[in-house]
Amino acid sequence: MTKRYELLYLIPASVNENDLPTITGKISKIISGLGGKIESDELWAKRKLNYPIKRQAHAYYWKVLYEAPTATNAKIGRELRLLPEIIRYLIAEPTPAPPPPREPIPAQPVIVEKPALPSIRKTPSPKKDIKEEKVSLEELDRKLDEILDDGMNGS
Image 1 (spheres, one colour):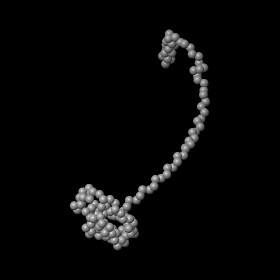
Image 2 (spheres, rainbow, N blue to C red):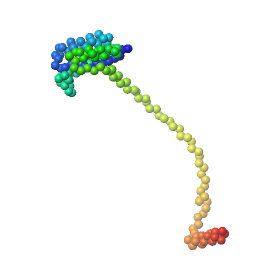
Image 3 (spheres, rainbow, N blue to C red):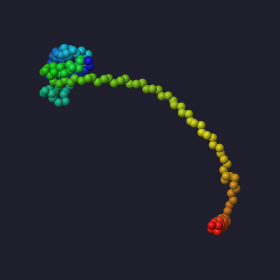
Image 4 (cartoon, rainbow, N blue to C red):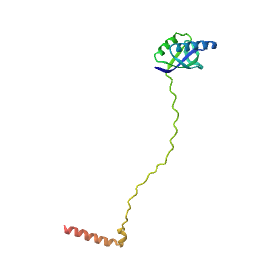
C-alpha cells in the first residue's frame, strides 16, 4: 500500500550552492530506487538554526513530497543517515488541507402560533352592589361588644 509522505532535510549552508542539485539528485535517486514516486522537490528556505547542529549555524531546508510503500521509509532513513551532506531529516505524513469553508445556511423565519386563550367571563364585583355606610368608632365598639358577649354566653 502506498501513501504520501513529506521529507524535510537540512543541508549545511557551508555547502556550495552549485553542489545542491547533486545532493538533492542523490536523495531523489534513493527515493525512486526504493519504489517511491516524487511529487515535488523544492528548496524551502535558507535559515539560521536555533542551535548548532554538527557545528553548523545555518542550513538549507529542503522539502520533498513523495508517494511510496510504507516499508520503504525505514530504508530511506538508513540511506539518509549515511550521507554526510545531510545534517537532519524528518519523514512524516503530510497534514491534510483543511476542508473548504461551508456556505452558511440562510436563516428562515420561525413562525410560532400562540394558542388561543380561553375567554374569561367577568363577574360583577360584589363591592359595587353594596352601598358603603360610614360607621363611627363608637358604633363599631358597641357592635363588637355585642358579638363578643353573644359568643361567651352561647358557649
